[in-house]
Image (cartoon, rainbow, N blue to C red):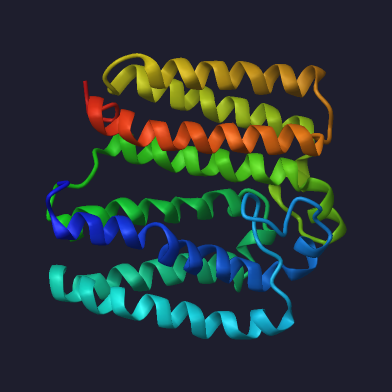
Length: 251
């Protein structure tokens, strides 16, 4: 795929343009909670757009999406309009229809991230990802979102958002996070090649279980910053690792 134009076009879109759609839209509605969040306002944890930028953001988002919409339809056909409609609907539910303020529903809404796999398959004319990998990835998106809620629980509570973490509490949220990772470990052990994925999930589940029992209710800012830097480094390395060794391929 590295010699295919469609691959690189999709890879380019999945970075800034898609990120602008997802997180720019989210920033428009999260002004109140983000303003109270000491982590926000930087390249690592997200922006704090002012009122002028929030008014301009919708037009900027549309302008950035438009050329990719045209290119995707030209390459893969009119079904790409359906893909964009699905992506817009998932974000509309989360940001404008109140899904982000409904416990558990805010986690289920993260299944929308699977549309990125659909985009890759349609754009590059390859088979869809196997079902266990889809389920694993949906759970991974939920777990990542839940961890973000745990970090922002005080800010969300002050902003009036009833997220899953706010509703059930920090320690139960960590137990839930650990349980999700154990399910992911089972899926990886049962269906995927190798042992790296289940090993990482089991280690993560053990960490968050111990953290739920012995850890603090609020993570120090230094810990969060260090964790996210390491997390991003792992993500960059794992992209190559997952591709090179077919980690999510069925065993």
